[in-house]
Length: 124
Image 1: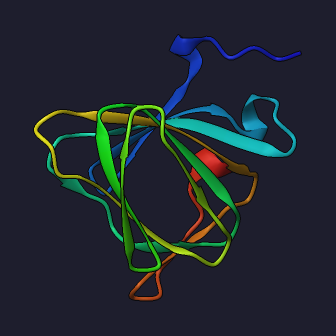
Image 2 (image 1 turned 135 degrees about the vertical axis):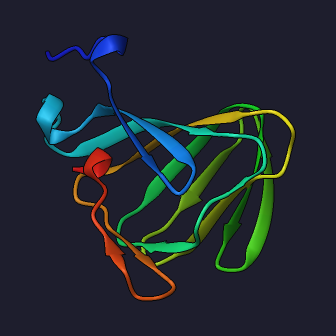
């Protein structure tokens, strides 16, 4: 069974958020991708529509997750289930950083409102 040690996690940054990637096909996973999202205080991530289901679990702090236009305040311990085809936006409107654990199936892609398609390396 592959083990990914914390120093081996691959770090990516996009739209003001830091993605610390642990489970990808490159680290030995065949079906799932998982990462820690670090959302600085005052960050509003870009709205995007996902191609696969995504599970977001808030580890620390507070986030506002907007799913298809409906805002949901989340605090540590809360989980959002984002179905494929849903538009999602994540915001940290507080003065403190927040972290979340995210899991999806390998191959997730996102489409921005302007039509730009992103295949994030932390979901491969």
